Each structure stands twice: as C-alpha cells, then as structure tokens.
Length: 337
Image (cartoon, rainbow, N blue to C red; front, top):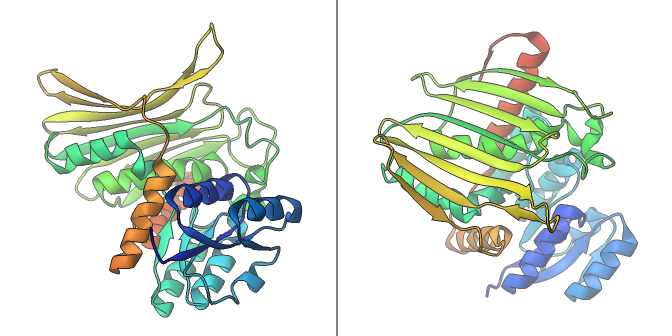
C-alpha cells in the first residue's frame, strides 16, 4: 500500500489498536516499543517485526519514517520530541500533552525539524461525524450558532489504570474523553476566546476529576457547552450543532439490551430543518473502521506533503481549552484563551 514504515511506541490499549490497524491496511511495521517485554515481544512476533523496551534504541534506526506514540500522557512530549529530533513524523495519541507548555514544545519541535506532527483523533473518522461535517460545511444548517455535546463512560476501564494518576495523565475525564469533543467543537465551529468551567470528583476514589463541564464563547458570540464524565452509565458520545437554518445531531450513544446483555451502539446523523422536517443517516451497522481510515489519511497526507489532521496545532489548542476549564474551576474566573 505504501513505502512508509512505522514504529509504534507504547503497545497497551491504544497502541495495540494502532498496531492492528496498521496490519489491516497492510502498512509496514519496523518495530514496536513497550516497557512490558512479555507483551511487546508477543505482539512483535505476531506482526513480524523487531521490538524494544527502550524507545531511544528504536529511534536510532533509520528504516522507519513515522512514530506512533501511544504511551501514558506523561511521556507524549519527551518521546514525540525525541522522535521528531531524529527526523521522524509523529502521530501522538490524544490528548497531545498534559499541559499547554508541553504541547507548545511539541509543535515547536515539528517546525524546527520540518516534520509533521499529528494528534490522534479517530472520532473525526466516524462515518456519522464526517457526514455531519459535510452537512455543516455545505450550509445545510446555515450559519453555525452554538454547539453542545457530552462524552464519557462508566469509569470501570480506567479505575485501576494510569489514567487516574495525575502525574501520569495530567487530568481526568475532561482531558481523556473531553479532548475528543473539544477537537470536534473546533473542527466544526472554529476557535473560542473565553471559558468558564467546573470539574469535580463526585463518585470514584481517584485524584483526578470524574466529571467536568465547560462553556466556551467566541468573540462573535458563538457558544459551546461540553460535559465529560466517568459516571456516564450508558456512554459514549452525543453532539448537536445548531445553525441559523437548522441543526445536526451526532448520536453515538450505547444501550444494553435486557434480553442479551449486549451493548448496541447507535451511529446516526440527524439533519433537522427549521420547519421540523428531518433526514436521518444511519451508520449503526457499519463495522468499526475509524483507526484504519485515520491511518490511511495520515499516510496519504505524508506522501503528498500535506499536514495531516488533526494537526499538532489542533491538539495544542484542545489542551489549552481543557487547561482553561481546569483554571476556571480552580479560580472561579472566566479564562481568556
């Protein structure tokens, strides 16, 4: 498919998804890196590649073009910067970093080394999200006025992981899940200029927030509201964009059937006109493919010399938005972006 070659650094939950996606699209994997040697050696055998337990050894190799960084957030900046300093393009999982300072350093490293930095954003490749983007960009709802959305899950999968360790993660659900929605807010609506927010630990015995809310406002009056939660029992994501002529709803909610106990995840886009007429685009029966589509687009951008989306700058702006929510919650003030 491509002459580009990849290294995946961090082969846990998200890293393994990237490895599987690379294999599905037929991309060459030069090596895998993880501190868990038992896990990474097994994955490397299955992928037909080398492995390392120290990323610095992997970065000495000259036979791969791109590093995918899927480690705990604490290591995103140092590993990504080291990779870019060695001349590699980087796809770094969201959130790009723990803080605006780390994110700025990563964006600067990409510029200094003349390489591309991409922020992982697989939600941009959901079929219903892309349909909604097409409709909004095509003027189907007129001039966008406001956006609101929520995202989250029941917290079980993060309770005993690095995600709830503030030193390793940098924050809780708002930085972990909220980063997805905030990226979509900017993609659909552009930048915002100020923020009011609140975060709290309401249910889980952890040191980071399990719930958070934020309100953003642009200089021209456009508004956005986000809620991110680890006590969202049904999950996972729901977003509405309202314009002067109608609205678009992105629905990725899940529900568990009583009879089977299995989760059924909705994937629809609903276009509603001002007169109440509706069109529903249903993608619920499609197999999950966002990671494969994102990597194919990443490769296409690299081969044609175009900046991949979401860019490192996009990821940096999202980290700034999350930080503004945290600062507003801490100080009780409106935070300028």
